[in-house]
Length: 430
Image (cartoon, rainbow, N blue to C red; front, side, top):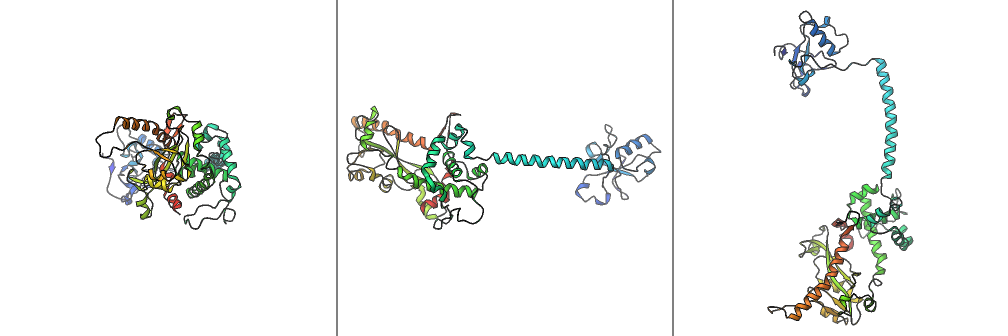
């Protein structure tokens, strides 16, 4: 292209407010820029006039066009200079007059005022988006979904917890030095009411939401969520432990509601089994080995669960480190203290606890062992099948505990194992 110029004297672009200069080709904004000679009015006045009008530079007329007047290639379609399809520059924007500038400033001020109002409305709407027990309890379906409780059940639990909710000693990283209650603690007041803290804790337990997720939903920091949840889990454990003896009925009450399939086991008290939940790997190397479950291949906490023949959960032990055996957890959990003389306990083959139950006058019902024999007798096979048919109910009860049925979508939600964090593991060990 003959009009393109790359070398020679210093060249400046005459287009609008463009600052292209051949002296600064090393700068980023000059990369690929070429200079084109401006058409001369004495050769092609019409073309020169079109280019001058496109430049829209104040005071720039045909008389100002000289032999060293240039325009850079950036102002053409494709930024490669004039072509047959697009021979003229793209028109520049008009430089505003003083009156136009004044009008523009007024418009900007009005828009700024509207933006502030809109921002305030957005903040109010955003604040109202936070989860709050007082707003959610108006929607019974949503409340049940989040907590697993109806509103009357929640209020009954709240009433049972009593005035102690206002005197909680909040969990601290150093388990030996608990945090002071918020009445004595200096600094700002608690952002959440005790009822909202209970509400958030139930959501954490029920749905297994991440700490960061809850911090966004309730408008508090992730650290606050962690402290509140850990404190309330410990508090609920202490307050609700009083129901343990009441939730495990004696044999006479069990017999009144015994299903027909259990009629041959008239003295059965409960069916037991162990279950495990994944936890984060503890920082302490000693605890890592104790929490590792060879059965699950992961660090876990292990629980002993007992159900009545009708499927009601009647016993749940404390959490033990995942490496503990079934026999050891029965011995250490305090389950034996709940048994009476003549009780029958159904379990899997792994529970070799005949000696422990005999010391309490109870009897163990488990499938027979094959030992060194080649096969079971017909009676043993029938007994194995019958016990397995009845023992399956405890596994179904455990599955119900671990999974949440969502009736709205008819699907199963498995809570996140992140409920059992490393800090929670350490706190349990203290």
